[in-house]
Length: 156
Image 1: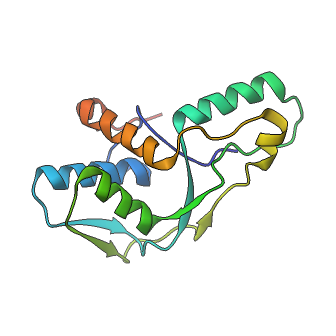
Image 2 (image 1 turned 60 degrees about the horizontal axis):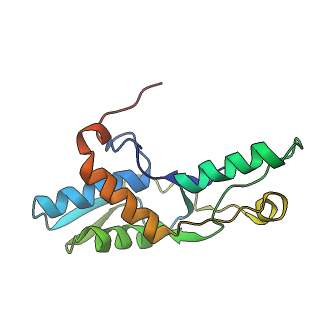
């Protein structure tokens, strides 16, 4: 099982992308447009466990090499952050100094989503190498350098 994956090469479509790419795009564009506010869905109270895509790839390779049981193993950071804290961190990292408006007309989703990575550490030797701040910095840089590609909606 994977935690909430984020990183380069994600889609940054405002209507279809998950919270990290959507908030990165909103924050970067707010800075560029000198906007005073950005709007974020929900209350900001739910927590999520985020993991950088490079760590996911490494975890999956380790699982393919070392794990042969039919039981699940969690590939995650095991660390929770509220959506509010995430939005504030992304504002800081993108240089957005305006106000974050919480749109409670949209649902929060699950109030908590965090996975226990202890089995992955024990069975695979897996631990996250890219912390949230560093991963977000890398993702913001990728988005800025690849924005036309990043804004395309991926359909399957």
